[in-house]
Length: 113
Length: 112
Image 1: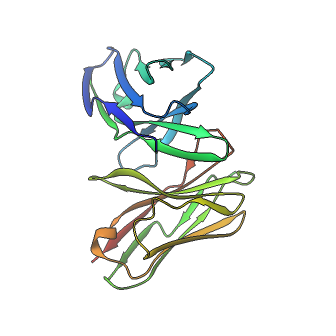
Image 2 (image 1 turned 45 degrees about the vertical axis):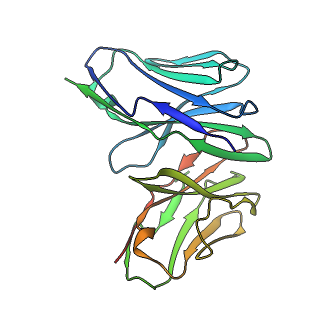
């Protein structure tokens, strides 16, 4: 089955700096890669996603890149703010009739003011 | 839409008791997922349904766990008998095919 690895497990940056979180996946058939943000005591919330026919997607301060050949994808947050502090999860899915989603272990991001 | 609804939000029970967690997915979504989250194991997929049919239950830890989806707007996750190691936050999520999943607020289960 699919195995998703996520790095780093913790990340601390200064407000205004950029943060990058990286994930690798094992199943080359995976074609959908969402990212979730989970604040303390809250539910995971979808913040951005990318499909395998696209190499990069951007939404304001957040961008995701995908390298299908290397089977890795990354989340980039620019101009970080304290409210970006949370645990971020990447995930991978094959979709179609096999829509199970495998999550990475999460990255705890702390943005220091 | 009110989003994914879960009940109860908190459940405290004694070892050996039956626990039933409930979920109402977003109307129109054809996939429903049950997850368990702990500090040690992270976010684990337990089972998911497509059009009310269980597709993959390989994540269900033991026969003590069972899940049903009698119709498109309701699902249950049952643990019988419960054990202290079942203590976790259980999330239900729903989605349309090959799209992001929307999570419910979760049920925090404590088994003493």
